[in-house]
Picture 1 (tube, rainbow, N blue to C red):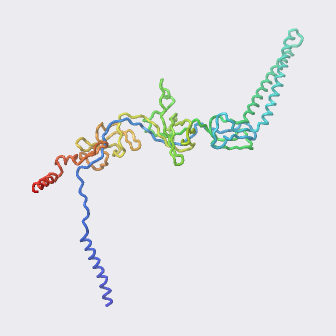
Picture 2: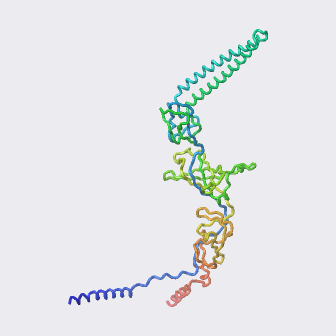
Picture 3: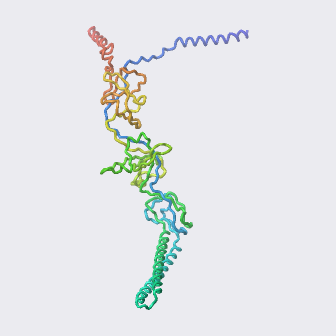
Length: 423
């Protein structure tokens, strides 16, 4: 009996499962069927009109100082004082004292040079009087000719001694002045390498400094971008009586999480293409980049990576379309007056962000199809929904216009009239 139950139970369970599956399949709901789309589809369109377009050439680079120098002493000695401005990041003005070297030895050298000059001048005065006296007495033959020649030679030696003493005095004064190292321009300290108590000598580096009057940035331009910008060259900065306008550059960067903007100009063009990238670099200059008129102005930093937008030519009477409307690199879809589409080749002269600039292949008042239609054949009828115009209705469909009102509209009206009469 147990063996019989063991055989019947699985078969019964399987039969029940099959029955349940059959009932579920027999009673399943019908799937929703989407009604087929009409033959005429509505598409977004744009009515074309020519316009002027400002070319903006994107680039990028790193901020550099136009003038950067190494501060080096020209005399030996111990540093006895440094300015409060002589710190990394400190600002200073032209001719402002930055570092002082112990001047004791140079003051002594100056005194020695002054004494030597006095002695040389006294010797010169004596030699001059002696030679003048000899010139008088030689006329009376009171002295030999050789004595006159000797006094003349002594006079020249005395004159040379004075000149040598004057040169030594000048050098001593310059060395004493050089114990105070002054700023060569308005600038800022990049790095400092010396402090009070250190001994320095000519050739030792005291600091790296840079001028704050201008900052520069090298911007690469591709060869295909050069047709749309006039670059400053030595030969065209002053053409006749009219000088060219330097292209403006809008520079953008990040300071922390904040966006910062600066305005500059392209002032130079490098004389050769870059050997590796085959790009031409131009130099943009930012005037007074470190001045802040208010606390809201964000500072500019050296070696900061920034983006740049260079103002190029202004294109006249061109057509601007969205990048999504361009197909196969040089093809657009035009909607005719009868609502049919046709593919047309165009001449693309510039691409900027999401804008495509075209100067051939499109005419004013033509409708450009903006809706993607990858497989629609030429001659397909569509209903254009034009930007800035009233949206289309069902009556705009050419097929509906031929049929008149939608089916059932007249019957529905007639049924209401008959119902009224019957009542």
